[in-house]
Image (tube, rainbow, N blue to C red; front, side):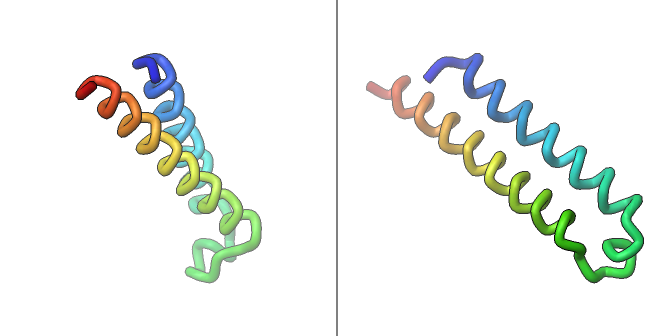
Length: 66
């Protein structure tokens, strides 16, 4: 795992989070605290992106310990 791939995964997670937040602030159902299907899908994508970034970080850290 390279530093670039870890950075790419983290960058993608940040991008997904920004898209999700932009949706939340412009979606009337989400503003009323009842999530719409699109908001739910975006949140799921963001959480998966976060998990991928953490896996990449941990894999890179594990390589460094070898």
